[in-house]
Image (cartoon, rainbow over all chains, first blue to last red; front, side, top):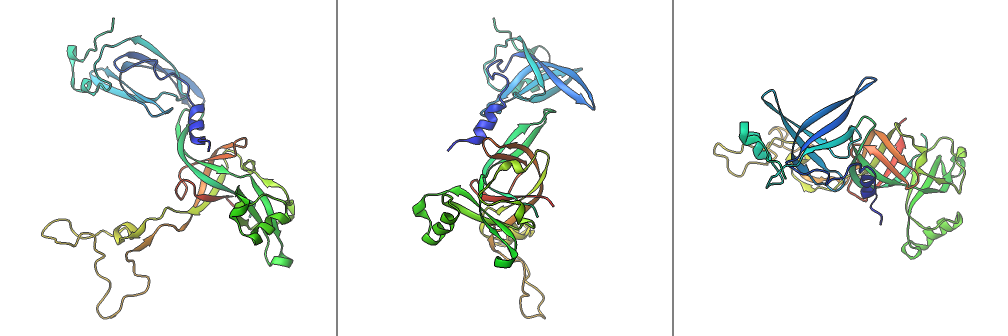
Length: 114
Length: 207
């Protein structure tokens, strides 16, 4: 029998999942609709986690804004995501970088991959 | 009532709408359902349309039922359901009811058999509170409690007790149609519907 649910999920796939890895610094361009107006919001930060549900991936971006840590979880294939730009490749030894939440100052900086 | 359709629950997933919001949907393989019989008031006493769903091998059904299908020259089908329709003459025999009778954004009611829970206690079946967990309690955690007053000297009929739960006919009303795929005979409804995967459902338009 044909797996129709798999087909429906497959049709919604938009972005490639290996575009970026945890530790990378990315810019996420997100479309935001307010009433009739449409604008683009840019969220810049470090990717601290990726969830690999088949064809339904999610990723978490963390940044520190005015001393307050902010995290946003994006569905990778959401139509509201205009584009994702990788600014820096990070050098990390874990898949989930939740340890960054407790770090401040110089320790919270992820080394760049060269 | 207008005519509905029969379908098989395939499972749940999520789709995105135009705004980018994620919507939980149930995917149902609905139709095509051939019209087997039209029942009218003079002959049968009531007006209804009988539909069939899901093809089956010839040897799997009884000979009298095979004769019923041979009358309208349709391959044997596993499930038969009746839909009470007021003007049956608008539906011509030897046609197929397909999923395109529904449009996106429409509201529907879905009927099916819910998942069986077996012999369930009063906490699960009737949302009883149970007994205290601590403070010297022994073996009185999930008990029913009092069955009634002492002067009645009997337990009243309809007292909520433990027993068989689930496998009931359940109707979920006012579900939104998110998408209709007439090529693959799929209908996507917002939210959940009764039963496990593979449950046969009937989908009706809301009146």
